[in-house]
Each structure stands twice: as structure tokens, then as C-alpha cells.
Amino acid sequence: MNTLVPLVVLTPLVGAALTLILGKRPQAQRIIAIGALAIVLAIGTALIFVVDAEGSLAMEVGGWAAPFGIVLVVDRLSALMVVVSAIVLLAVLVFSLGQGLADRDNETPVSIYYPTYLILATGVFNAFIAGDLFNLYVGFEILLVASYVLITLGGTKERIRAGTTYVVVSLVSSLLFLAAIAMIYGAVGTVNIAQISLRMAEIPIDVQIVLHVMLLIAFGIKAAIFPLSFWLPDSYPTAPAPVTAVFAGLLTKVGVYAIIRTETVIFPGPELNSALMVVALLTMVIGVLGAVAQADIKRLLSFTLVSHIGYMILGISLGTAAGTAAAIYYIVHHIIVQTTLFLGAGLIERIGGTTSITKLGGLLTAAPLVAILFLLPALNLGGIPPFSGFIGKLALFEATAQQGLPLGYVLIAAGALVSLLTLYSLARVWNMVFWRPAKDVQGYESRLLENVSEAPGPTRVRAAKQAPTLMVVVTGFMVLVSLALTIFAGPLYGYSDRAGQNLQGPLTYVDIVFPGGNDD
Image (tube, rainbow, N blue to C red; front, side, top):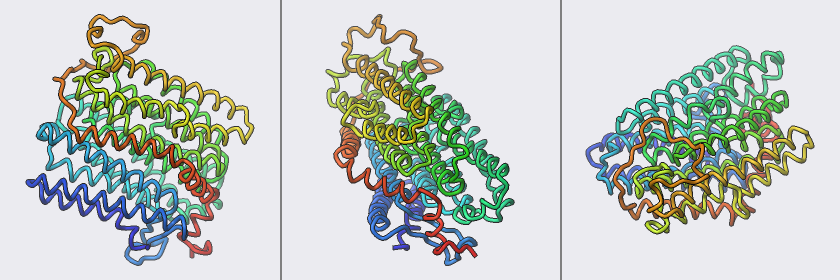
């Protein structure tokens, strides 16, 4: 089964090359792009069953043994992330296909869009199975190049400005990551993650802390944890709806995934756990306060995205198998639900011509199905029982309470409050956009709209359009996937628990790459 591992990266990469060659044949591009991601989804699903039943896989590229060659590693966590990412990437691609066919691809140049989208997928998959820091860095850089192209599609002033901010911040993160890699190589003589884990104990503790902090800052920028999240609410909402959905659902989770590897394999000690708990607390609270103050749906969802990254960091900061398992389950939940909400926001923008809740109303009558498709993931993100958001938060709170730390109880209280404020923010959106009669939009006064701010710059209202059936169907499919996280919560959480157990201590990961723990 090792031969399947590199196909996770090679399939979208080859697909990107073919779609670039067939730039003047959009129909062929669509078939290739959808086919490539469907193949990765099938491979990832097979890998989940294999690694869960038979153990993790390591592929030495080109036959060069570790640590001299590139090693691709698939364990329970990386296999799960590949499958969830493939589902999201495939669904959003079909959503964008529906939008493009309806608009005759006026907003997105197809000859560029499909190859770039597959290159983005290549970077995501490569990051999840990278067995050394430099290959992980390459995955991040592939993401950066592709995401800059996608975020500036259409060439509007707002998108170029947002793309510039995004690239500058990402480059700073990449430079920090590259400097950390150089320092780690200088300290331990390798960039192989498993070998670093074996040798890091020989390094003085103060040097370890410096290297640890550098990696956390680099990955924290990509994960958008506070105070490194300032760039996200101004960058994501300006992109086309499908691009925003992918960015919000996936890209920050690549940073979270890298933090998990850092905390469980490279630096498994508890030295920075308390600091991470404080960061988790601030990320949750500051993010949701930003969401409460927004009148633009996309910006509001961007702030909730930041806020809920804090829950994941909480699970990681506990340093326990239960905390890691809860974080893994919550990551899967958040990828699916956040993507679905942004797809719903795209439908609202298309039907109402804007994402400003001060200028929308009466969509419950105009588009009742869209109202339901937005309401269900909104309740899920808010943590209403019995949805997966409630299950994930409850698991995180239980894992935190098991440690019995005063700071942990503060985090539980803050997490519950953040969940309520998230629900309040999304309920306000639903009330203003769907429940409020359209005739009351102009001059409507409500306490729900006090002290909220629009997106920076002039609010643009486009002509209202019908939502293409394909866009609605894809959003409905993602809602069903989010509900499946609740229906099959038992098996999924059991899998997450086994993944968390594997990540408890670095020896399991080391043994994948160096059987017997011998790195000579």
C-alpha cells in the first residue's frame, strides 16, 4: 500500500499540468480537475482503513532511505486530514463550476483557475504527509503561490490589496519557518521530523525553547491564532465565494496540523503548554468579540473562524491523548461546517446582491431552502446539541477538566461563553437576512444592528441573481456531510481517539520512519 502514498500529491500535480496544457478547453479542464480530486478522495479513504487496521505507512521517495531521502508519512491523523480536505476541495470545485457556468466564467479566468486550484490542493496534501520540515515548507510555499493567484482572481482593487496583505504576512511566516529550519539543522544536523525528535533532547533547554517558539510563531501566523490573526478578516472576504470557502475551511487547519506535529513529535514536553492555553483563551475571546461587532456576513464568519481556532489550540495545549483526540475531532467538524457556512454566504450574496445584513431581508420567502442550508451549520457551529459542534466542545471541556488546573476551568467558562456569542452572532445574521421582511430593510432600526460595523471601504450591492441549482445542491451536500459528523460521531470520535493515542509521545511516529528507533 506504500505505493498509494505519493499518489496523494502526484495526482493533483499531474492534473494541474494537464489542465494548464488544455487551457483553451474548459470542459476538459473541469473533467480533469474533478477526476483528480475524486481519485485523491478514493486513495485517502483507502489509506484511512489501511492505517487504522494495519498501522502507519512511510514511503521513501526514490528509494533513498531516511534521513537522506524525502519521506512521506501517513498515520491516522494525516490520512483523515487528506480525506476531509479532498471532500472540501471537490465540493467547492463543483460549487465554483456551478457559479462559473451560470456567469459564463466572467469572474474567474478558467484557464488559470483550474490549474491553480489543483496546485493549491497539491500543497495541502503535501503538507499533511510531509515527513521532514523542508518538505513541509515546500508544501506551505506551494499553498502561498496558488492562494495568492486565487485570492486576486478578477483583479479588483480590493482583491489586489487584500492579496498583497496576505502575501506579505505569509512571506514573513515563511521566512520565520525557513530560519527555524536552518537553526534546527544547525543544532541537530537533520530536517527529518522523526530524527529531530530523537536528537532534540541533546540540545540545551534554552535553545530548544527558542526553536520551539520560532516554529509556533511561524505556524501560528498560518493558523491565525491571536495575536497573529490580524490579517485574516481583511484578506479572505474579498475573494470569490468558492475561494473564500476553501481558504476558511482548509488553509488555517494546515497551520494547526503543523502545530500538532510540533507539539507531539518535535517538542512533546510541557514547557509551553500553559502559554498555549493562554493563547487559546485570547484567540477564542478576541475572535468572537470581533464577530459580534460585524455587519458583513463574510467578515463575521472570518472572525468566528479565528475564534474557533482557539478551541483546537486548547486541545493541543493540554498535552494529553484525550485533548489531542478532541482537537482532531473538532478540526474535522470545523473544516466541514465553516466551509458550508461560507458556501451559504456565497448563495446569500448571489440572491441578495450583498453580504451586508443591514441591506438584506426577506430571503426566507425568496429562498427558503437557502435559509435552511445556512441555519443548520450555524446551529452546529454555535454548539447546539446534538450537533457535532456540541460533541467536539464537550470533549474538549472534559479533557480540560480532567487536568484540574485553574486556568483550565477559566478556559471551559470562556469556551462556553464564546459558543453562546457565536450562536448570537449567527442568529442575528439569520434573523436580519431571512426572517426580517424585505419591506423593513430601508430605515429599519433594531438593537441587533447597534454598534456593528460594515466591511472597510464602500459596500457594493450587485444585481440579485438566481442561485444555480448546482451551487445549492453542493451546499446541501456539505450540510449533509456536517450532519453525518453527528450521526457517525461514535466511529469518528473513536478514530480520533486512536489517532490521539498514536500522537501521545513521539516514539510511535519515530518508529514509522525508523523501525526500532534506530536512525543510524
